[in-house]
Image 1 (cartoon, rainbow, N blue to C red):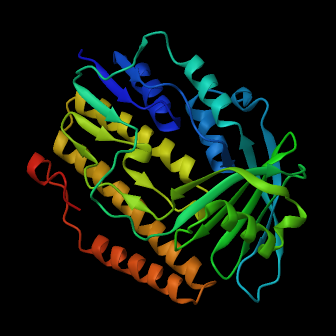
Image 2 (tube, rainbow, N blue to C red):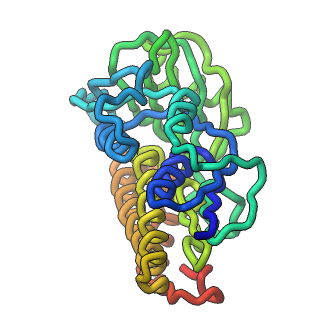
Length: 330
């Protein structure tokens, strides 16, 4: 049996390498295990435990449990506090813990060798445009741990404050127009939203990342399949990006296994292609409804127009046929 190369050692790549090794494939994992800090919802925590055979949740040792969510969504909305089970996870610690649980048969490499299959879990620049221009400005700040995540809309977007434990927390602002000064913008949004009551001092280590949903055109073809951030990005408002990254890894491993067992490759690769398109379509529709309920300004109107255009394109998208020359369609 020829080797499978998994490029990328984040949550999706590590999960796919595990499942392929369980199917007795020789696997080479390319990249250093790493991931950003995560807030995993209850469904993702359960999925992580099932896939990684961790019923006692030892993989989450050192993490902090969130039990409630406080939301004010819309200018005239009253704050609502709801039960919401989630876990704030140190991404670097989790990546190392997952890598240590990989079977010994998984080899490591700094560069990708040739293999029968290439599974790409690392995002690459793509000509396929995202469904919007919005960005997420994120940073860390001093924040007491009270087990409550908070989200508030402002005139320019929405702001989130999540206590991570040990006196620090994650603050994030999403806006349709990338700001000229991200650090100042994030500090202003925290104060304007009222979340400054829980956040002490200006955010540090501020980063800017695309936040608009994106679906890669080249998802799967014979000998090559893309998972996680290499094929799908969800708006962080959903809170389910980590779970969907894992699901792409699970589905990709199942597709490769079924092809090895003699099932028609065209049918299976087409199924993978369509499943991701369906997830993307539903996510776009949810984003449109959610944002339309809170924002009316010109910048958000333009953003929602892009979303509507992407939804229309998804409804008329061609179906993957299994041929390499049309694998980039949709």
